[in-house]
Image (cartoon, rainbow, N blue to C red; front, side, top):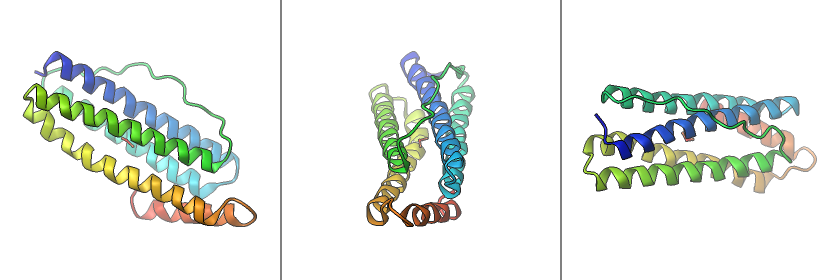
Length: 166
Ligand code: FEO
């Protein structure tokens, strides 16, 4: 069984991963509506990844004999300024998730819960990858720009990422 404080934080992480999945799904839908099929596919795949992150946490909590809580999540935004706005928000959100994971890791050490500490190492590595992934897209946006054929090229570049990370 997990200590109460750790269980509470793991359950909050479950909710955060669930929200991230819906946020990226909403962004994917916006991209589809704007004809940005590459970005739409990338964000859709990433939304599914976030669900996997959520399920991994649920399984861990339940394996310890504690109960994973499936809580309410707020509706994500469904309107965005442009694709730059979308990827600025995804990067910001990933930094937020990283901060949550770091706090959880700190807590497991303080509480001497080495099993949870070990479990969370996967998320520490994953967050490093995700921040780098989204930062890389922001860099592409800076280099390619959104004017003229830039937006089309950018969408093609983002589509290529579907075959690598995801
Ligand atoms: Fe599961 Fe992208 O953080």
